[in-house]
Image 1 (cartoon, helix red, strand yellow):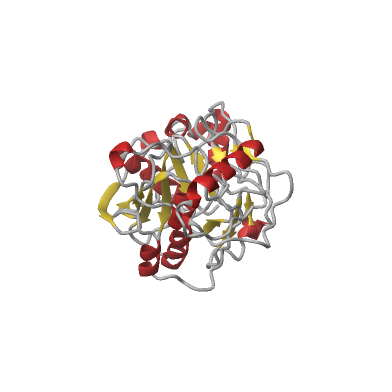
Image 2 (image 1 turned 60 degrees about the vertical axis):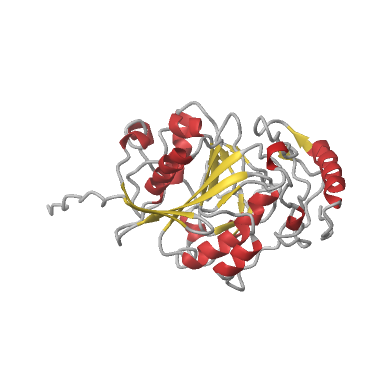
Length: 348
């Protein structure tokens, strides 16, 4: 469902009432104690008709008196559904800053017009993906603001030229983010994925870990296998610690998301997913995407049952080299060490 672009703030109340009634009719179940359920749209969403991610964002204006602000409506009044996502033009950092006037230093945001009901930390592992990062920030900031969330974007940058370890960087990001605030949700986000629908709520499920990116364009908008947990996921701090986080031992070889899926099962939990008509993402092209679909045809062969209790948050070792607050994100540069040197294979 799309709303026309309007500029008069007086429309906010009307939009809020209309959208709240419409969405409450469509909702069912319980994704969290604040945002209940996934949207069940009775007819297919038309992704050929999309809206700009900044549509109606100007309706959110600063409240005249912060001391007497009320809580945000449980459901945002400016949802539009399918969003226009394209990577044809690389936006400048200045443009992104200009279009997101309420984002504070460090990539922090609180709704200017109301008190947020939910706090989400977005954690992005990163190294040498500056173009993809800029595209993501252009879309992700307004996407999160549309949902009236309090949030902060963390970029966890791996120092050095050794093998990349995405899983360990996520553990570092969780550890560092929890020092800053008591987050309701830890949103683990690949730098090359952009959400296509603002109904895809960036909040955690109250009871189980949630897989957000259930329909990626380079995977023909379908799951490659039933236990797939890659791309974008959401876990409460409790769930993250219950599964002992990600493994620290996956160096530049993938499979860490399959390990997490198995940890979830072993911890007595299960995976819930954003429905594919809402959990749609576009993946940016880069040197690793050419064989992406081939690489995720099936889960990796792992030994999670014997390793998950000893390899994770309870064995995490790293050194923070720098923490810098950029206008659009908090950059944490870390030394996560080197992979263990394997003994040479003896010739027989």
